[in-house]
Length: 558
Image 1 (cartoon, rainbow, N blue to C red):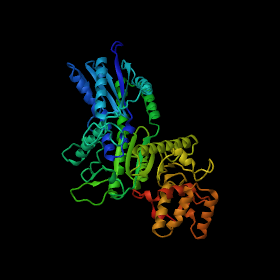
Image 2: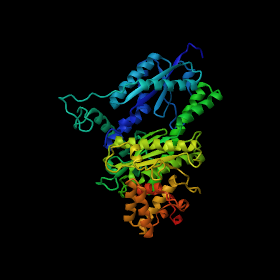
Image 3: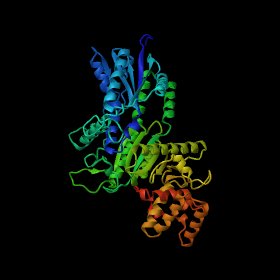
Image 4: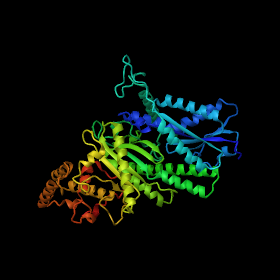
């Protein structure tokens, strides 16, 4: 291709998504915000491209980058077809890349798209970057585009909506001026309208499945529906119970992507060939996460962890609501009792994907998870921040274990935090309060997703935590372990686990025939009590219900 035939490769990135979705304490509004965000790149951007193309004479564009069965398109025509003014490269991972032949067309799309985002979201920000290209090397263009996007985002000023004037009425939650009926701000109106659209698309069998933001697995769609209100998530309606906010993020996806692009460079793929590989990789990650999530949901439905029995015509409500599912970035809220088990099962399934016949990803789909266990009235935005911080802590542990060559049994890790009462300190400060020394065995840790059945169970493996929780639950049910003693033990841990008081209590319990080491798996009964494991198990014992068949082997307990 001649050097004079310059085109542009542009990337679109929407900022402030998490803050936008979790800004309200009403789950229905968060559902609406999730629906709005989910359609910005998938639906709104292609719509804008078509609208602008319609204002030109004979302007040809291509918005379909994969087919209806989610198979990557192998054609990237704009490289050779100079009559195409724009073509979507791919959409995924929270961004969209589009190739343009005409600069004026590109600028009109940017203006129209920015206007659309303001009208449909009110507060989200759009970051756009571009690089000139002659379609010689996609990998070089892609790396330069990412660098340029980071520069644009670092220089951006986040837009804020107009506040209320002294003479205007304010809505109660965020203080924005009332501009819509029902004492609502524009932001509330947009989210609630989107939530009503979501409810309609779920409730009507005539509506296409594609209109739902996160369709249930096909075999469940006629019998179940996602939770829509906070009351759908608590154990009993009318209760002010606990819920779990789960954030899952893939491990090293950026580094893996760069390694793949280096391979494409060595293979000397042409531009269209590299675009095809990029499309295929993007779909592979998204489809892999969605397929494994669907499998977990089917497990939950099969174990009847939904609302009480309904009539034959009424759908049962699963105590789960996905809010973000964008490639390897997953956030959901669910009933507290299945929060940690659901996250663990998901991580196990992602690791198992590499060994399965149906799905053999070209990169690792392993991930880490953070779980915040909070009251149902707890601020949504803060719960998400806690879950996100827990995920970062889990990733840090995974990285350190990899660096020290201590982790050969898992690529995934999870961390959780239970909020009791108010939350006024940073997570790190709260956890440091448990420590008597840097090496205190009672300090909080993250748990590695050790594969079930492995002989070398470790004290920091989720299998050990899961087993310990099961032993405590079974011991209480069978009257082997009185709740009063277990409550005293946990209270001592919660007060900081002062060595003298803790040792005295352990000795007192032993004199009554209660050896706390018996709460742990036999493989960990080495004479040194794993206090941290027992403490964490006691903390979540009432908020942990297995969702996996065979997750706990009762006959294996001694």
